[in-house]
Image (cartoon, rainbow, N blue to C red; front, side, top):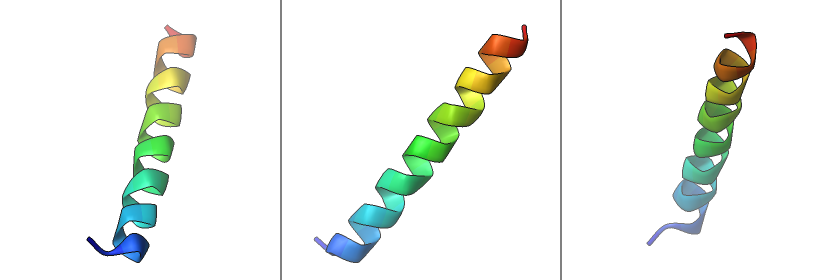
Length: 27
């Protein structure tokens, strides 16, 4: 397990969730 890659994955997940939330909010 690479902590750096794990952090990147977490950040990517957060940004993806934010995108989905924005899309849901605009509907």
